[in-house]
Image 1 (cartoon, protein in one colour):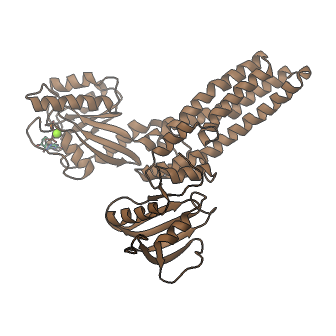
Image 2 (image 1 turned 180 degrees about the horizontal axis):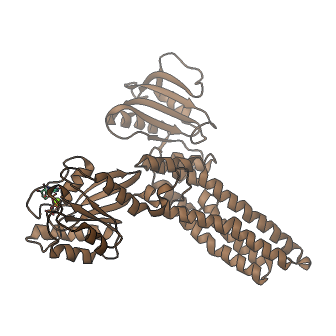
Length: 461
Ligand SMILES: Nc1nc2c(ncn2[C@@H]2O[C@H](COP(=O)(O)OP(=O)(O)OP(=O)(O)O)[C@@H](O)[C@H]2O)c(=O)[nH]1
Ligand SMILES: [Mg+2]
């Protein structure tokens, strides 16, 4: 994808009417391109780097003015890509942005591919791969906690941790090199044991710590899917509306109201929660309800957590027992609704029969105890990670996979050291582990993996 030396351009702001739109150009011809299309108020001999200039963009083909703009030229290396960069701040209309972009392309720039600006920043050594990924994650963050975790990465948290492990492994390699070069002196058995325990403490354990934080932090990055489910008419849609604080789903006293599944995003103490209202589970009365129930079963299967809603003002029905049987082995919170009508169920014995699971008594109609319910959801999805600090270093899925792959080589190296296997064999395993760790920061990442990472970016970033 990267053709060294060419100049790329893209619209950097979202499409649509807005106050300001920005077009970015990066590469050796950035300044040439804008000189061709920018008509300043006063003639300019030399653009000062990182200064704003007022003027108009004109179509060089016919001299027609396209828009009134502010232009900046930023010379390398103090730019996002470490190349020469020009940015045009224009009015944000779809046609304006497209026309300016097309005159830029006519002047010899090429349309940037998704993530290409950030990819250049990476290839030119301004950021490592974990920071490039953090750029994308901070753009995609859906809660401020998710954003804080991403910006921690942007400052190089994970890269620093991984580089420390790599340096320790390089130290170990250096010791092994000596043994390989001077075989007659042999690595003493004590030396080998010491090295093995250093591998354990300086590489295996820190990697395992990172792996554990991935499991904990995953919910903040990726969010969770929480399905509201139960028999008809217990108040599932009312609960969705109460949580969203808007009349999103249709609520009626007629059982079987919900047929279409509704999904909305909710922020539960920093966790992006996709909350899903489903159709009441029972023997379907007609074809439409049957389709709704089929979809519902699929959503329930995909959900990370279930809110099993029951009507606390009535006796449990055979349908409730049926559903309860079905969700055994799943993560769920029992939601006893309609407490405003008076609770008829024996909550204490319910707590016993449902086991130690969370059970929350609410009124969706009056909005009672929704905070308690959110708390229960939070604890059910984060478990032990609730007190995880914002500064925690959490690998993403790709980084996690590389860490997992590095471990067996380290186990093997440690075992071989203890068995007295020759140092050259041990060194091979350590090099393999180093290779996997290098993929995290981008030193040894295969080209196709890089392409996959950057292609997930939007164009213009
Ligand atoms: N008193 C009282 N009524 C409620 C409460 N929650 C829901 N209801 C009523 O119960 C009826 C059914 O509510 P819905 O939210 O449509 O129930 P549902 O579980 O989505 O029903 P289906 O979509 O048919 O499966 C409506 O008349 C609601 O007003 C509550 O907390 N208290
Ligand atoms: Mg409903």
